[in-house]
Length: 303
Image 1 (cartoon, rainbow, N blue to C red):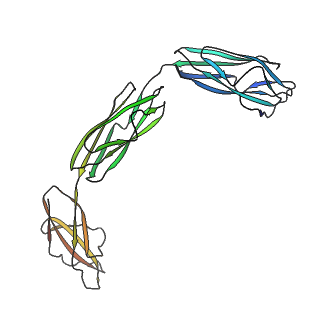
Image 2 (image 1 turned 180 degrees about the horizontal axis):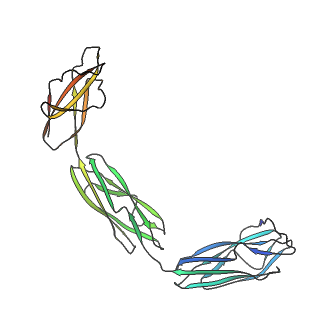
Image 3 (image 1 turned 120 degrees about the vertical axis):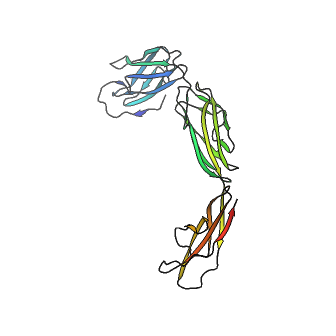
C-alpha cells in the first residue's frame, strides 16, 4: 500500500470514497502472463473513511497493496494494484467491491480482459546486405535489426555466418528479446583477397519462422598507388603543375582537380590485376593559368 497523500478539492461532509478508475480493461494478455494497473482510492470527505472489507471477483483477477480494515483520513488517499493473469484464451470479467462507511458504499470497480495465444515471431531487417567494393586490408560494417514481433519472449539460440570475410557481433546465443524489443546484429565485411564474395547469415531462435536468413555480398578490391616526382621549375612565374595519365602514348587525361603546388604527386586511383602500362606527363602552370608543353612520358607497369 502506498503512503498517504493529500487529495485536492472535495467538499463533502463525512467520509466520501472515490476511485481513480471506475473500470479497468486489460485488453488481451497472453495466457500465463500478467498485466497490472494502479488504482488510487481517495477520501474526499471531512471525516475518516474506513474500508471494512473488499472482494475481488472474476477468474484471473487479483489485487496487491490493499488490506482491510483500512482507515483513510480526510482528504488523503492510498493506492493499490489490480492484476490480470489469464490461464486460458477466454474472455474474463469481474469486479472489485469496497465496503466502507461512506454513503455510496459499496464502491464497485469493473474488471475485464481476454487471454491471448502466445506467439513467437522474429522480424529481421534488412534481409539483404550489399557491401559493394571494400579494399583488401580494410573493413566496413552494417547492422541487421532483430525485433520480437510476437507476444512471448524470443530466445536467440545461434547466429551462423557463411562467406569469406564476413563476421558478426552484438547478438550472442542465449539473448532474450521481450515482445517489441529490438537488438542490432553488426555484420562486418573484411576481405582478405580480391574478388566477389557471397554468403549468408542464419539466425536461429524459438520463433516459429526460425531460422531467419540474411544474404550478404561484397567485393574485395585491391588498389595501387604510383608516386611521381620531377625537377621543379626555377621560374618565379610558375605557380604549380598539372599531372596527366593515359594507357596509350599521346592520349592523356588530367588527374588533379586543383593545381599541384609541389613537384610531386601520388596517384592512388589505380586498380591492380589488369597488367596495364600507365603513362604520366606533367605540365607547368604560370600565374595566368597557361600551361607549358607536356613533359616526356614516364611509363609505369601495374600488374
